[in-house]
Amino acid sequence: MMPRSQRLALWCLALALTLPLYIKGRIPTTKGEDAAFSRFTGQTVTVRLTGDLPRPGVYRLPKGVDAAAAIKMTLPCAEVAVSVRGSDSCVLASGDVVAFRRDRSGKYLFLLGVMTARERMLLGVPLDPDLLSETEWALLPGIGAALSRRIIEDRQENGAFGAVEGLLRVPGIGPGKLAAIKRYF
Image (cartoon, rainbow, N blue to C red; front, top):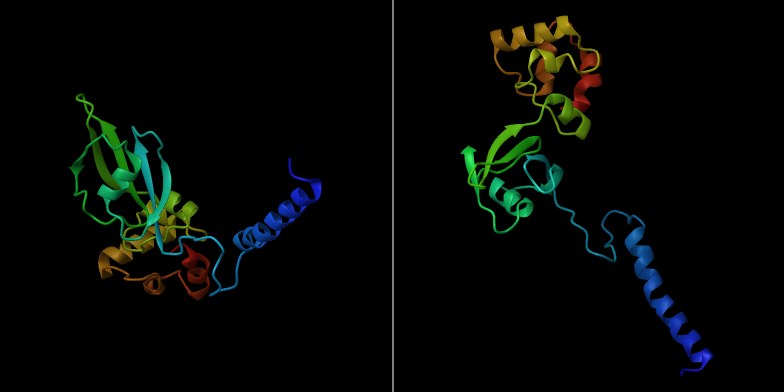
């Protein structure tokens, strides 16, 4: 058995070596400084995987991931997924939904879709002003039923807005209202 003084010395040495790593890995570092432990710092996309899955839910995946890679990360390795509509090689974007279900033979089928505007707003996924419906426009703060109807009419008459700043051409939307909703786009 080791003498008590040697055990204490080894314990102090171990503490002295691990404490800086623990602190550096836990405390947010200033921009440009490396952390003690590797962290994923690349861009991500937020997608929802739903249906007959072991773990459905909202996932943040690396930007550029395609549906096939999301399927491989989600389904057991022995399973094969077949697309109902769309290609499994299409790159997923924030706000996409990959819905899975099993057919009678037990194979997974999947369908690519898009999150609702409400879900995108809650998750911080940017909205597209050229794709929102009248009902979805009304969800935004300061945009009621009448203004959302004018937005849709303007888009039908004059074409796509291109960016949220294009909403300034709609009567009833000024710089103040645009500033209030801009964070959603």
